[in-house]
Length: 190
Ligand code: AP5
Ligand code: MG
Image 1 (tube, rainbow, N blue to C red):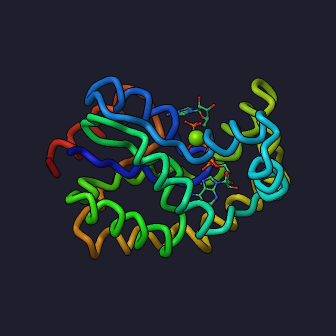
Image 2 (image 1 turned 180 degrees about the vertical axis):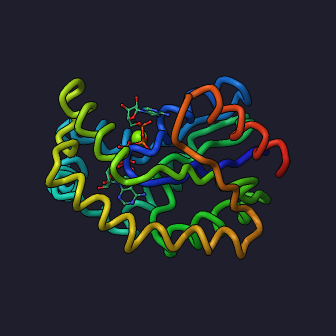
């Protein structure tokens, strides 16, 4: 089982590189952001709760997020592994993920940190906001997302270093070079 956590600030390229990793390794993809946007589009109760938080750049509560992730994981049959994109985002979520995988006789194989400077993140997300219209891709909300990332999510780098799973990737530059670095890092942990 290959379980990859793809990690980084908003706009660091988690979704973009996940697509390539899925194709290369034949694993399932869980993007918690995509899941929540699906709930918003469907107009569910969860979607309504999520929309307010997402548009304000805040995180969905841990307990709720962990439940959603656990049921999604159970829905995969005969899976070769999973890439977790946008999860975990807090220490509580990292603890929960480890527990969930251990209960299934598995663990995280590698945590891939995509490091990108903030000015580049801002530029990428403003551009995407103009093109795709994600409602959280406006300057005010992006700034809030970056604060939340730095305060609540960035500490997970040390968490995964302590767990022996952390791999640093320079996320600035050509997509192909970044992907090649990711593949080398994953293969080094397999
Ligand atoms: P989520 O959907 O996970 O958003 P995010 O973390 O803010 O990250 P993005 O999806 O914006 O960026 P990305 O890293 O995937 O980059 P991408 O490949 O798209 O979460 C949204 C919200 O949902 C959160 O704020 C929170 O409210 C909630 N949420 C989600 N998960 C949660 C959880 N676990 N707990 C609690 N709440 C949760 O790339 C960005 C852009 O850059 C694209 O346009 C792309 O084409 C471009 N790009 C990519 N790579 C490059 C490159 N190398 N050079 C130039 N451009 C590039
Ligand atoms: Mg994404």
